[in-house]
Amino acid sequence: VAKRLEKFKTTIFTQMSTLAVKHGAINLGQGFPNFDGPDFVKEAAIQAIRDGKNQYARGHGLPQLNSAVAARFREDTGLVVDPEKEVTVTSGCTEAIAATMLGLINPGDEVILFAPFYDSYEATLSMAGAKVKGITLRPPDFSVPLEELKAAVSNKTRAILLNTPHNPTGKMFTREELETIASLCIENDVLVFSDEVYDKLAFEMDHISIASLPGMYERTVTMNSLGKTFSLTGWKIGWAIAPTHLTWGIRQAHSYLTFATSTPMQSAAIAALKAPESYFKELKRDYNAKKEILVKGLKEVGFEVFPSSGTYFVVVDHTPFGLENDVAFCEYLIKEVGVVAIPTSVFYLNPEEGKNLVRFTFCKDEETLRSAVERMKLKL
Ligand code: GLN
Image 1 (tube, rainbow, N blue to C red):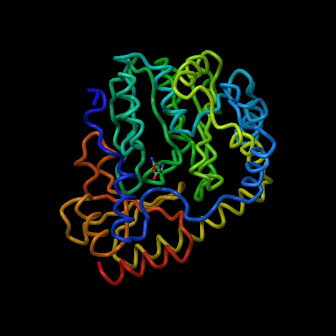
Image 2: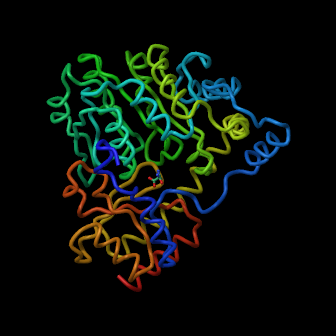
């Protein structure tokens, strides 16, 4: 394997989902719903295939999808962007992340990352040859250590990678935190790469896109996708919104990574993004109910549960159960209890920092969540 990928193992999500199947465990690990996306979107995909929309799409996206993404962004943030020049459709947000790193980062560039972080960030930064600096968000509230951040940002910093609502903790960056990040970026001429795939799963506060803060649009890449909002994680439709000078780099990388994204799924994505407001309200209401079941259950089981404001994840401290670290705890949980969670140590530059924490997801039907809680009550 190439040196730049040597330290990365099979992703933790693949490892844990494989174990879930092997041990017949209830999978509250990898974040994918065990229910389907809405019929009107699925029908749109089937119709697109029947209508012969099956050849390569335009590289940076079907024109109507670029427009639908821009319209959605305008509704969500008030920002008016040019769908032709500032929106790039990618194969999921994961490709948007890769294309952003590979298209805008030079070897040796310094990039700041908040730990714990979604595992693909570090791997794609490594592919781009970036020098990674981590700022750790700590329980119970995972707030940004602002002084530490100020000390870390300099004119050597090329970019800050942001993720709000935040996987795995469920933390949402507050306006104050975003404003501090913004002023540091403006002062030091730093870019922001902002992964906002959980923006529609914001329960305790309103989601804020950092691109909407004064002076930030011109230095921000905002990334999102269809997967979480429409419970279609397997469709892999995502996008990056950025001013033209940044879009150029993203599109160059995208052109040679995947060239274009699945045509019929893009076609269906147009229909999805035109969903009525009621769809988003209902999604949030459903997830709120699921969250309540899981959070209440985990507390009754005896975990220390950290507050999650957004995403479909919640992080707990497993140490009341006496296992030596997060990986040992997750192994025990799978084999002896029959439930899968994600150990968080893989989401840190220094794995020690995550050894007390594991992540559960509540993107499962209510009965599955209840059964998982029952198993844990019985056997932990
Ligand atoms: N984003 C999802 C999670 O964090 C899954 C990603 C993946 O499987 N690579 O669980």
